[in-house]
Amino acid sequence: MGVRKKVSLGFVVIGLILFISGVIAIFEFSRMSRSVTVLITKNMNSINTARALMDISDDYNFDLLRHLGTDSVDILQNLPDKDSRFEDKLESIRESFTTISESSVADSIKMVYDNYIAVISESDTVWTRQYSERRTWYFTELQPVYYKLRSFINQLIELSQNELTLNSASLKDSFYRSIMPGVVSVGAGLVLILLFNYFINLYLISPVIRISKGIRSYRDMNKSYNVTIENDDELQDLNVQVKEIIDENKKMKKYISRSEAAGNHE
Image 1 (cartoon, rainbow, N blue to C red):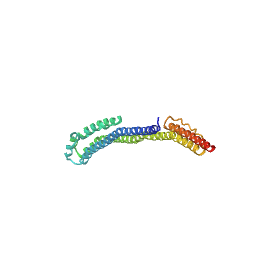
Image 2 (cartoon, rainbow, N blue to C red):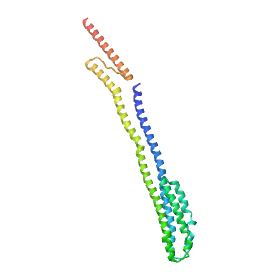
Image 3 (cartoon, helix red, strand yellow):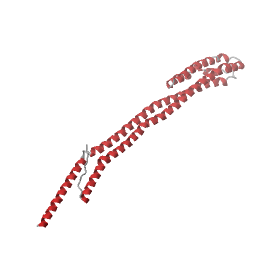
Image 4 (cartoon, helix red, strand yellow):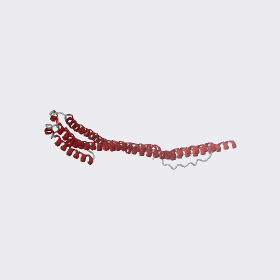
């Protein structure tokens, strides 16, 4: 193989390794980033929807609490059985769950919410009673169920927040894992560069230096040119041609010396 091909092949191998490792790093990061981003988006949606459920529950409770001391029945027009927001959001949030625990807590929320609705539905009758009876009903019947519902919603928010934290950490880890091929490729590239430098010195620079020293020794000290090159390339051909030229030069010098000696003898 020629010198040019050897050098070109060395650079091609180094460039190919760096290119492949870079493509792998980009592909791995993109793949992991997409998957983790989807999970994070689901976690955020779960948290936001759970907070919306909390707001809806608070609206029901606080409206009843504000009207507890009045005989007005206007509040009864906004009872949950006439508002499907809670159940719609609870069903939509199930698509965002990433763990079994979240689904389990959502089932508990649905069960407690049904109980919550059942208690609130008694308000039609309760509001026809005296304030003391309404107050007793609110604090003994409705409020415990309301607190229980809030507790389960808070559990769902906490679970989703924990998953968000874990998935965010996974995104960070995926970044480091994705750059590992790049780090490995840089390390491999450095090793290849060192090896390439070694072989360039061994098979290119060193032979050229030896040829140069052999020529200088012949020119300055008239030493025989005995440089040998083991490479099967242009440098070996160059060394053979230099040796032939030097041998021809030596023969020419001898011929000129004999001719001059013969002329002087005559």
